[in-house]
Figure 1: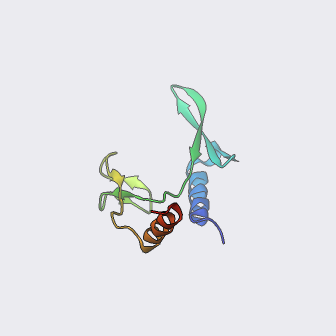
Figure 2 (figure 1 turned 90 degrees about the vertical axis):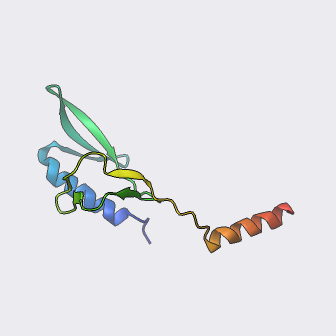
Amino acid sequence: MSVKGTIAKDKVIEKIKNVFGQDYIGLFDKKVYVWAEDEGEKVQIALTLTCPKIPVEVAENSLDYNTGIDFTNDNVISSPVQSTEISSEEKENVRNLMKRLGL
């Protein structure tokens, strides 16, 4: 069983390769490296890909998922969606911990 997000990250890396073409350098130490221009100088950019446990909230209809182009502005992401409910597994963990601590 692979880590959650592994397949998705591989697909994202393929898209990065396609977008950057010859400016795609490669994958090293779990980072994707690409070339980019910075005031006329070519510099390397390292991208770290993670699959967040708590996803951010994205404004509806702002992102074209086929192209990845944002048609609104750069402020479409808000704070992560946090669950305020305690899961039954978390409740059980607390009960076991309290029992072990004699509380």
